[in-house]
Amino acid sequence: MKFIKSIFVIAFLCVLVVNAQEKKIKFSKGTLKICSSKNFVIEGYDGKEVIIKSLHGNNNVRFSNIRNGYSFTTKGAKAPKVVKGRKIVNGSKFAVVSGFRADSLRISRGNSNNVFFSRTDQSMKNGLKRLGKKQENNELGIYFTIEQKNDELIFRDNTKGQVVMFGNEKYSIKVPNSVKLNWDTTGCRKGTNTTPFVMYTSNVSSLTNFNGEVEISTSLNNLKLTDVTGPVSINSIGGNITINFDKKKPLKLYSVYTNNGFIDITMPSNSDVDVDANGSAIYSDLDFKVLSDTESRGQQHMKLKMKNGRVKMKLEAGHGTIYLRKKK
Amino acid sequence: MNLKEHIQQHKPAFNAEQMSATSEVLFKEKLKKELHQPKKSKVVYLQFISVAASVVLVLSVFFWMQNSEESVATKELLASLTDESAGTRLEGVYKFDEEFIKEDSKIINTLLKILHEDANANVKIATIEALLKFPANETIRENLITALENETIPLVQIKLIKTVSFLRENRAQKPLEKIINNKQTFPIVKNNATLAMNQLKQ
Image (cartoon, rainbow over all chains, first blue to last red; front, side, top):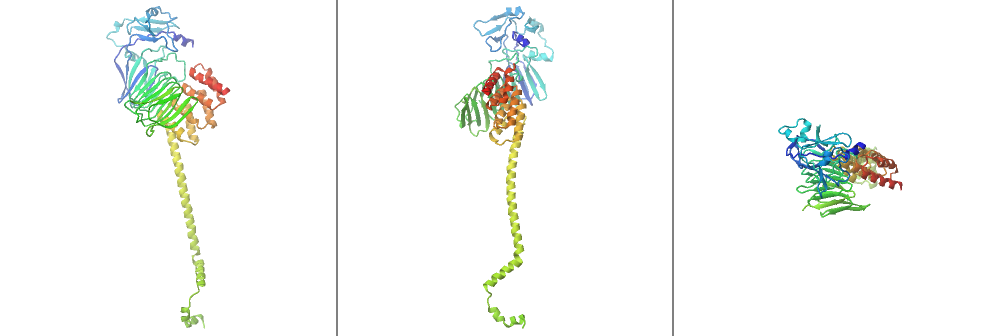
């Protein structure tokens, strides 16, 4: 625990490189497993490659001073130069670390609470390419590990060096529709509350225009799905789930469980669905046939049907509210 | 005079005379008794056999159809419960919850396996809900307590905690205590466990 606590005091600076380059991985059959709390914008397409592109472009990295649960400080760190380079922007909610050129900062960790930063002359590597397979991703601005085994392609947060790249990291990923997506924002570490670095970003991660099977697990991250036809299973402790059917209709099972986030679904009025909803309150402007309507222990439970009720939608919001909207 | 001569002599009289109705009936009865009796009883016996066979056939076809329909539905359900796709497994669990009334041990055992081993939280939560159809089943109750002891996914833990509290299962106090005292337990899970513990102690 002492070790973990010591990690909390590390003020880590990301050096993010604007890089329009993409990483393409041939993968059209099997499961894409994303074990990361980072911000992803995922889109389905009819192709045979998984295409990753980093969308983060700022040289300055922002750390929220009001972030719940985690604080970042250099207190106790024997790195006076870092403190010297740090300035608070007046009126801002963020502490911005500046005064460095992009890609010029290096961080290393010595004993507990000792953080060392060093600067390198950027111009020295001009015209050269970083060697080593592991460094290839860093050059593309990709700060998670990529592993392929059997029929699984796994993206995982790199926590081995007790340092996780975080901040405004954002990635675009194009996924073939033939692939199954298994996305776990808790980093695929089920049930352990010991992860020192979990990034709860206010940015909503999204999945768009995907026809394959989807399994998503989140703790507090908010999610937005657009034109994802199913089957979909989502579970979240406190994340809000927004589901839009803009150009498509639900075609296969939707199963959404959250303990206290809201579930907000917008779908066409001619959707062929059978909705089994349970939440603190249920709101809708859709023309449902009400099959059952019960309430117990402050929970509203309704079974609703549109057309023939071909596609099952099981929505369990716990203490959260369920909104079922008509697409306009 | 023998009989032959007597008949020949009185032939016109014999021809003119009508046979009495009584003797005709008696003669017919005698004739039936002597000649047709065995044949008739055989026919009746065969008729009885064929009617009985038809009834048996109809009944057996009816029961066979019923049984085969049931086993096809069960077979399909078991196949979906063990499918690789979480979506298909979920469909199976929801189907069982809505359409199956009988306690089928094969299905229950498959659901209990899901309860302990499935990787998808949605499938596990849906399974717990489905198992609650049989609250008096001791095997199910015991398995829910064991699952509570071993489960690590926070959302599933919360569902199990609410379930043992709903079942007023006092044997769950020990695993609840373990969850409360575990430093790795998520705060929201701990809160639910504390609440359930208080309710069970009341």
